Amino acid sequence: MDIRFDNAGVDYGTRTALFPLNLTLQERRIGIVGLNGSGKTTFARLINGLVKPTCGRVTVNGLDTVGDAGKVLGKVGYIFQSPQNQIILPIVRDDIAFGLKARGYDKTQVDAAVEGILARFGAGHLAGRRAHELSGGELQMAALCSVLVTGPDILILDEPTNQLDLKNRALVQKTIAGLPESAIVISHDLPLLEDFERVLLFDQGRLVADAPAAEAIARYRELAG
Ligand SMILES: Nc1ncnc2c1ncn2[C@@H]1O[C@H](COP(=O)(O)OP(=O)(O)OP(=O)(O)O)[C@@H](O)[C@H]1O
Image (spheres, rainbow, N blue to C red):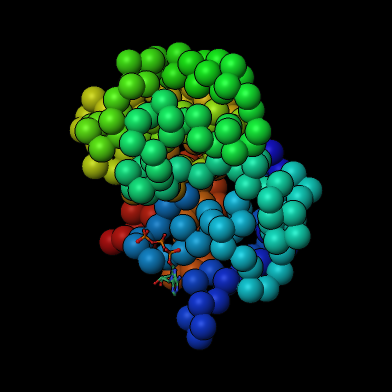
């Protein structure tokens, strides 16, 4: 993975959500921490092009997130803070298949890919379940399958352990640790990030620490008082 921020920043009207920053991200596991409203989601959404920089540019593996927006969306999968808003179709298997059909896969290819991704996460039993009946952890797994089945190189997870019980949290942590894809994880769950190679700390729209997990998390604790 090679993500570059070249003087990229975001203003919403007169409010600056992210001050311009220069940064290269190449590590396999990157955490993002900061108080509420510090700019974490804005930063992450710049990477898949959901938010456009109001100054500068962002590139992902050489692709511009504005000029090559369609290709960037195919390379960067995004798991939203509330996976229930991400699952579109009522049955898990159909939701996972949805992105593949949109990409022109035929039925045999779709069925094989859906079965393959569910097997990868030991989630075959969820295939026929109704998404709105799933537990938080199951929903997180279904969302992960729906995004990863399309083969992104980079995965962004926004608060993946939010509202999960200890068992499901452990499952999600183990799943993230085992992902071959590069992962960028926004989280208030600091132990989730403690093995990460690099953690970015945002404060009021500014990147204030960029360090291995232990150091960045210690700075965050100081900042939070
Ligand atoms: N669409 C928008 N329009 C106007 N202001 C916005 C918009 N999105 C975010 N903001 C503002 O930009 C700032 C950064 O928001 P952002 O969602 O990036 O923070 P965050 O660190 O992810 O917060 P949280 O931890 O609460 O999810 C906040 O002040 C927020 O109110």
